[in-house]
Image (cartoon, rainbow, N blue to C red):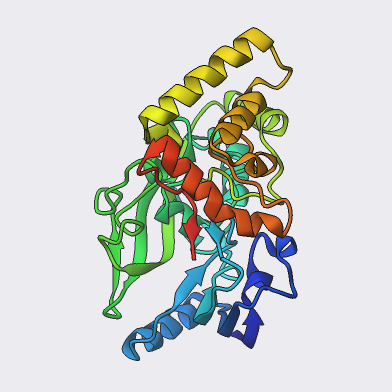
Length: 310
């Protein structure tokens, strides 16, 4: 097992190059990178036995660590990245790349994965948050998942046991306490050409319509399932009319800038790609993130953050 002491918290994150390295004071007292599932299991069991609080991260593509957040124990699963065929299923260690798994499924002509092409993160995180796009999701393709419970026992759960909902699971909601060790994914053969064509179409659409992954964590807020406030409805309505009348080249950007200006938060516009995607463009973005959360709370009733904020 690889082990490091007193590591800067920002250095292990997806957004590492966006932090102010001089003022970011968060540290990781004990940073672990287990190289086998057995090492990972025993480490978690030991920390459970000692009643030590610890966090587990994968690629951190869906985790935002504030500049001054410190941890006593942080475990990275990024070295537990094996996946392999076993009869009719794909067996995946918790740190295996969703992107690599999906590409393998598409190459093999397996149905149900094409829309998830290019999704970042680890399969453990994907199961935890029921990652997905359109009609496809990890939860729908899951056969079962092996979980280390907080009492030290290991159990295998079915998709029904995990209570999957849109971008959530019993694990994410805290209804089940445990750590994902591995999972098995279904492999249903389909029309290979149709599947490859769909994956290419999705890939090209993402390149044209979404920003690159370097400075964002994907969807920040799940506004599509949130109820707008009266203020939110009014501002969105006025912004839509304004975009129709003025016909700006970037209608979505115009609406976002108008709404932020109306809220007195014009400084946020440079960090937003739509209302639901926050971009960490520079060190100032970390200071403005809480301002973004305040703004979204004015526009929606109890909006749910998609990302984990620590």
